[in-house]
Image 1 (cartoon, rainbow, N blue to C red):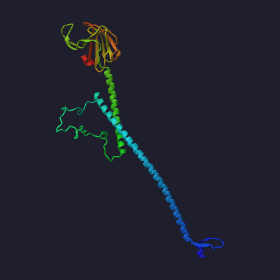
Image 2 (image 1 turned 120 degrees about the horizontal axis):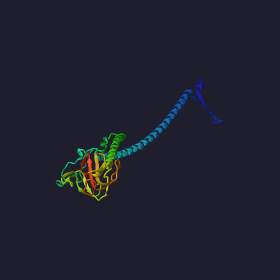
Image 3 (image 1 turned 90 degrees about the horizontal axis):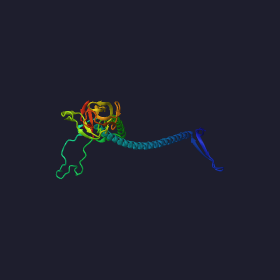
Image 4 (image 1 turned 135 degrees about the vertical axis):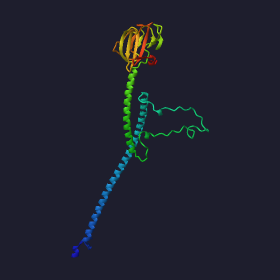
Length: 325
C-alpha cells in the first residue's frame, strides 16, 4: 500500500477479453519529469524570445547600415557641393582682389610684378625646356586648394570632419568677402559719382585758337599767362557742361564777359567766358551734356570763341588734362 501511495498507476484497457496493462510511476520521478518539462518549455520560450529579439536587431542593423550608406552618399555629395562652392568663393576672392587694386583700395604687392628676364631660349643638347619627355613645363609646386582653405589633406581625417572644416572656412570666407563687396560697392559708388562730376569732354565743338600757358597777349603784345583754352566756334554755338556739378556763379565780368562757373566737387571748378548768352542760373545743378550757354564775343575778346578754364584747388590747370576725346 505504501508503494501504491508513492506511485502513480496508469491503466490501459485493451478490450473486454484482454487484461489491462498497468504501469506504476513513482511520484518523485513524475515530479522530476514535470519540472524538467517545464524547464524545457521555459528554455524553448527563452530561445524563441531571443530569436525574435535577434531577428529584430538584425533587421534594425540592416536598416541602420542602409541609412549609413545613404548618409555617406549624401555626405559625399554634400562634400562635393561644398568643394565646388569653395572654388567659387576662391574665384570671387580673386576677382575682389583685382577690383580692389583697380579701384585703388589696395596697391600691387611685390610678388605681383614680374622680374625682367630674356625672351625665347634655345634648348641645350636637344632637350626642351619643358618636362623630361619634351612636353610642356612641369607645373610648379603649389599649395593645394584645400590648404588654401585652411585644410590639410590628412588621410586619417574622416569625411564628416572635412565637411565641418569646409563649412567653417566657408562661413569665415563668406563674411570676409561680404565685407569686401560692401567696401567695393561703396568705393564704386563714390567713383561713379566722382566720374560723373569730373570734366572729360569738350564743352563746345570748335578749334583751339590759343592754348594754356604763356602766350603773346593779343591786347598788349607782351608775354602773358593764359589760364585756359580759347576755343573758336561760330556765334551762338551751344556750350555744354563737360560734367555734372553746381552752378556757383553767373553774370558779366569786364574781362570774361558773360560767364558761368560750375563747381564739380573734389576741388574741381570750370569757368566759361565770352558767352553771348547764359542759359543757367546760380544754384542750378547740371549734368554732363546739359546746355549752359551760347558762344559769343563779350568782354575782352577779338572774336567769337569760348574761354574754357579748369581750376583744381583754386589753381588754373591745363584743360587738356580733363578732355578724353
